[in-house]
Image (cartoon, rainbow, N blue to C red; front, top):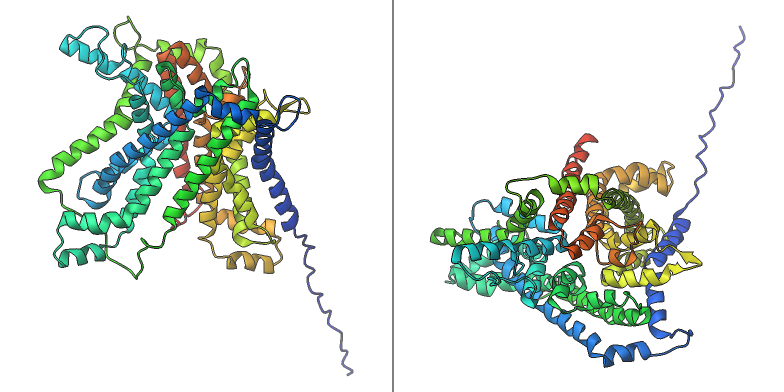
Length: 572
């Protein structure tokens, strides 16, 4: 019987989908976006500083800046204020960090949590809280002091409307930067070095002075520079406390140059030295943290050496409670008291809540604008930071590190300087964004880009590129790999970045104050406007609302990763 042999059908190899590498187009798109966000306002700032009204080059603005004592004095005052804030922040934060990181003080984790509350509190809101507490006539501290001592009606124990009061109020919300750096530095100091000092006969104080402090000195100095930088570029607290006291710092002076009659050229010229000082301070911080002389080398070391406080424990707790009371507990209590009471009316009342939410016409629009910009900035800013961090970390095209430089550049731009640049760039008839929410979105994206990029960049370093390479081998494009592989692995970091950007947006005032109009005001600007009219009850309600929203976002975000699957371990 003949055997019929049939040819078997050989399956064709699967055709891979046509892959289009979008790395280069995405790279150039990101370059264009970051250039618009960062370089365009700076270019207009330089242009207005160097030309006159007829468009001719001139140094008249800088001549006026140097020759007018009314312009020189705010610089001097601002520098003195910033140095005072740096010194006071270190004096508060360094012993507090040592007590929390290296002693047996009870409740150390709770203390750290309360200190981080200062990060969430907008500094301008803290300044208003200290107005309620330490205004010379109506401050709660002075009222209580006069009631207890029988002092004259206009005698004051403390006066927040002074240079010293301004330094103190700002330091209350800049010392956490120093605290965080110093506490982290103390956590990383190996116990072996301290044990060696003890073996060689060094007592506790000697070891602390000659071993521990030199190792954390770079962190202390870097924290001091950050506190100085924050104070030098801050607008809200000086505007609230310095202007009623009758003096300017440079940020409030730049703001005043936009009041009638506006002097944009002089404001631009005054912004450039502030920008230069900011760059120098950031370079100093990078130089200090980058020094090799304090780097600890070696293998695995023991746990940090914990000092027993013994009979000094009550004194240590007194210091901690004093710091927490002055920076967190008393300001929050003052806001709550002001929100729930009314002058001349005994007992608690909801009058201010009813006024803010149902009678004050500006509340709804300001809250809507704040939430829209907060969510939009957080979403767009996180997506932009994700793409930039991916391009820099994986380098799919040549020149990718340029994106990192552009993303970090806004760190050196004070908020008030960026506000001036954006106002000058987007107030022209051909590109009129002033008076819309778009100019605020551009400002917030620029201000929050460095923080978002830093967080996403650190997250990318915790993910090995082999996972992405395997996805590429199986036929996925770069964007598909980023969406399907990398982004899910970065879920926790993405959520943390989103929260960080959102909170930073709703508490921003320095750039916002120059860019808002009657139809685009935010809650922060409404609070500042109400402060000029002295309506502390309404201010307290709006301030508490900002704090509740901020803490709620953080609390919800901490739970979100648990809803989407297993949570990744913390990236180190």
